[in-house]
Amino acid sequence: MNFQILGTGSYAPEHIVTNDDLSKMVDTSDEWIAERTGIRQRHISVNETTHDMAYQAAMRALDDTGVKPEELDMILCATISSDLASPNVAIMVQKMIGATCPAMDISAACSGFVYTLDVAAGYFARGKAKKMLVLGAERLSKMLDWEDRATCVIFADGAGAVVLGEGESYLSSKLTAKGDDDVIKIPYYVGLSPFFTIPGEKPCINMKGREVFKFAVNAMYNDVQEVLEQSGLTQKDVSYVIPHQANLRIIDAVARRMDIAPEKFYHNIERFGNTSSASIPIALDELNKAGKLKAGDYIVLSAFGGGLTTGACVVRWTK
Ligand code: UT7
Image 1 (cartoon, helix red, strand yellow):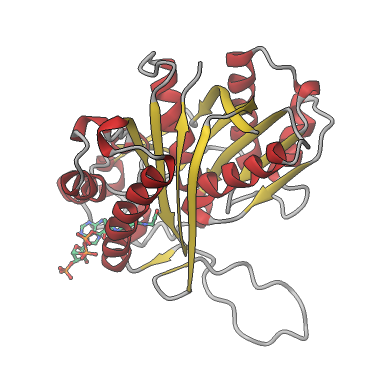
Image 2: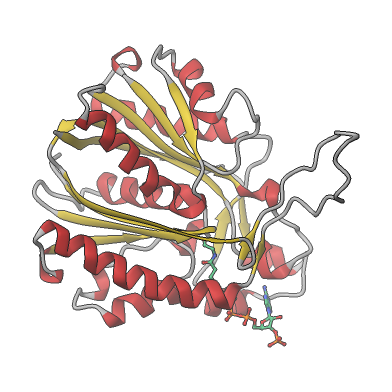
């Protein structure tokens, strides 16, 4: 026994920041950002916390299914940007929606949502859950150096959610980790301990973009092939690949190498930027709400990010 996806939800802050807006803040241009990343605009939080966004996404996912908060057996949230170290985002959502189940966050950067689905599958396999809420929620705008044009044009805020019920739709998965704090690093607040004397670094996203790019294309290509093989499927069976929305050129490069039609690689990075662990559930929700998914469709999710981590899985749509 594992799970099926009963419904989806997502939320992005109302405030939109365009490439032109950013070109007034740093030395960049709409042309550079659109050409190099595909991004045209992103949603940035104004006074909304990560758990505020996660709550909105959770409510929309519950509405999509008719599942009541009290029916949930567990809430998991993939995030690296909780506004509170404790309570975590998942517990804040538990409180806000009026659920009573256990809740916890999982940290695996941009691969977080795929990692978290894999953890969720374990609860179903052990018969510990009949209904779960799984979220990806990020307020990356608080972790950006808004004077660093290499990162502030890329990352953004948002949240996505799925409600899971018992089923057999999680067909295969692959998670990887390759310890590396050189290519992507986000230092944390150093704290106030008088005993810790190592000077703090800026608590902002620090990234060697080109290296991530190369890593990402190879990893996604290999991961997608491997999870399809594990499921006994071929590239021709795929209805949609939902890649982590990090760069349209990464998505295009992977699509070019595969025998899957480019239009099956869903992207919305143009409108949302890179929302880390929220990017895949936001994209899944868009596909679902647009009525583009039908029962029996095979959907491949594939992510990569800080860690360095990667995660991919195949899910059969049943709604
Ligand atoms: O979520 C997972 C984590 N992140 C990623 O997946 C990111 C993966 N990498 C990327 O998406 C791309 O590498 C970036 C979009 C980050 C950068 O694109 P690039 O084509 O690899 O550019 P680059 O870093 O090699 O920089 C090229 C030039 C540099 O100038 P010089 O040295 O050639 O004079 C940069 O200083 O572009 C310059 N540059 C910019 N120019 C205008 C860097 N950022 C900007 C900017 N506007 N915002």
